[in-house]
Length: 265
Image (tube, rainbow, N blue to C red; front, top):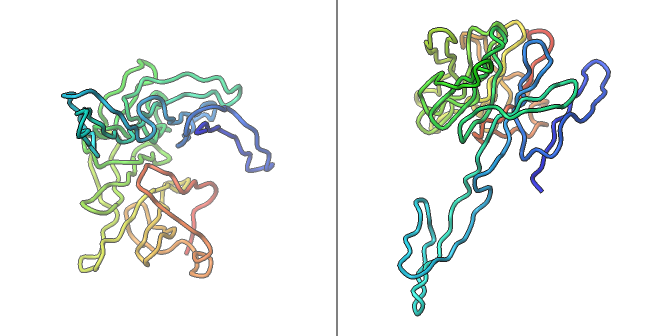
């Protein structure tokens, strides 16, 4: 089925072990600052797949219905409803696997734990980015722009990098965690035949650089820039990049996790 699981992998010993199983389409794990807990997003309720329904004569299809057909003799109406999965946040104890579901809206995706304020988890919702107060069990707006997706905190908690749907393509912005001030870090070349995408940012451990994915060379590749957006360039040599099949589908996926030192290139 669609059940997934959360595993822990030890980078120093190469050991791995399951932490939590039987969790539908679980993704986007984010660590608490002290490493004792994880927050994840998982599919919970809604309509996971396309559904077909048939009703009686005169019944009105619900909003969103398509492929509507009315029987020529019976007058019965048949229609399809699109997939509409719901997503919730879950908190997991990293030592025991014990868990609890967190207050979150109907479409809670891509949680990011604030390393400077352990009470706050920011996530992408249907009305923009939301911030969950773990102490009070309440969430409220962090940003009200529906195009903000995939939030990631800087190591010091002062900035949040996001993938932003800029018209018909993706760009990367940072948002000041205290003031909400935005800075655009990437920009598609003005006279490009096709808009260039940049998405899925990941901070270096010291906060000085951001790795991300871009299709500037015609296919998705890993790129690197300074945290102010300067010096953007491919992360890997051409021959190494050609061996990696990188894809970004715009569903809040995280493609990079950075551990260790910054990159000089």
